[in-house]
Length: 346
Image (cartoon, rainbow, N blue to C red; front, side, top):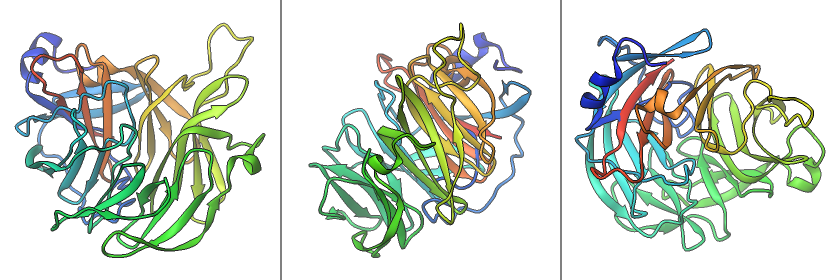
């Protein structure tokens, strides 16, 4: 539950607010080679969240950028952060470029439409040179200083930037391979398979086949999506730097149990990875679950409204740095067309 602030005060203060979330392992800094340095919070937290016995601090961010994702179906990876730059897929499938200052708790708009016509399932991934996204069934790259989109890879795939010169290429049940990236964003060559395609993994611990999302950081890479079991189950898996499967997030469905085990995910929404934790959204139940990154143990879950404020129907997240996450919370039918923004510190 949100503490230290009543919902009455919160409704007034959050009308034009931004929520930023749980920090961690540079999920999009470490994972995308960002140059953000660690910061410490000097401002008193506006609210606190209890994931079981674990407490996360929440800091409101004024939505002066007029950000509105309208993430109606809770699509994952609609946000990506590298250093001071935030990239977001907004309500009209535009790619917006913003500036974020985690110390001052501010987000401002740089360009509301650096690209248009993005695929509705496009995953945004930034590195020090620019940002990857999908349109016309192909992954494209747009440099920070440019306005010309470059075709990054010839086949229908998503690209997750690990740093400025390496990344992962993936798509649902297909294999995941590591790739060398040029400074202009183009995939120059494959560096080897790091996760086999589904027929090889079938029946094993990594049975994720649908709606796959890849995140990465200095510790390894993480795949999230729907596992194919007796029924579709939201799941996450963690591979270390040696491409060894180390942990999984989210239990299997138990047909005989009256209630499911702690941390069960029915339908995966957005996810982030921090230095110590994994946050996974269950968009079916409108819950945010907190897991230990290395062991996979679930600490607890909170509702979208507890995390983002009253009447929140979607949560989008991106790791800012080490232990800070940007949380964008909103309602697609909001007449004001403004999201609520927070920085969550774990």
